[in-house]
Amino acid sequence: MKRVYQYLVGLLILFIGVDCGALYAQKSALVRANAMLTENPRKAVLILDSVVRHAETKTLSVSWTLRGRAYFELCRVQNYSTKNELLDSIYNSVQRSFNYLPDSNITKDNYILLRYISKRFYNLASLQLKDTALMKSMAVNKSANASELLKRYHSQALSNFNKFKSIYETY
Image 1 (cartoon, rainbow, N blue to C red):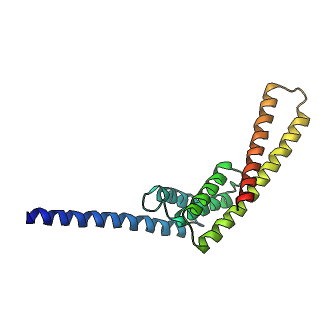
Image 2 (cartoon, helix red, strand yellow):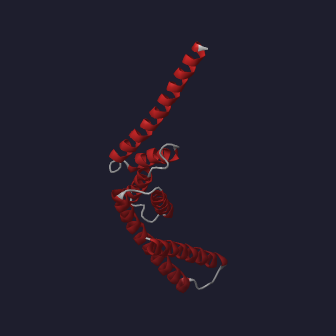
Image 3 (cartoon, rainbow, N blue to C red):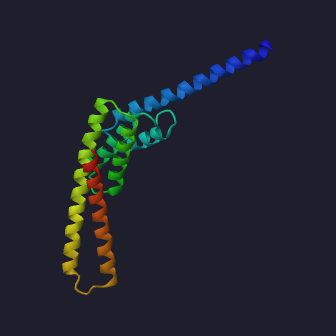
């Protein structure tokens, strides 16, 4: 019986050590991603995507804010500011960060990110509406392709404007 007890205690210590090691590894990945945020945002995005999927760190608001900042840097550095997927990723990250009750510094970073993406959504919506108006005036032959393209541009513009409006009214 004593031998089984020693075995169970050893096994318990091993599990606790592995669990603490995993948490330490995820937190060190957060620090590593934060350090490479400006130099290599693509690699930081890959690291932070794995961090927010991990059970230990997905409830930390700092991991979600850093993920949003990484996507922001990717937009800024590589001029992907017109990609809706990246803007949506920033917005989703900020929303998740607010769900986990961030401290004041993280909240300030979240508001900076929200200001950035709200401007981008507004600019995208206005550009797409201008393109729609231009395409309507140029589409003389009213073909099915032109009509379909106009509907798609108009729905994208409306979607981007609704995202801007949601951010503006909520935050």
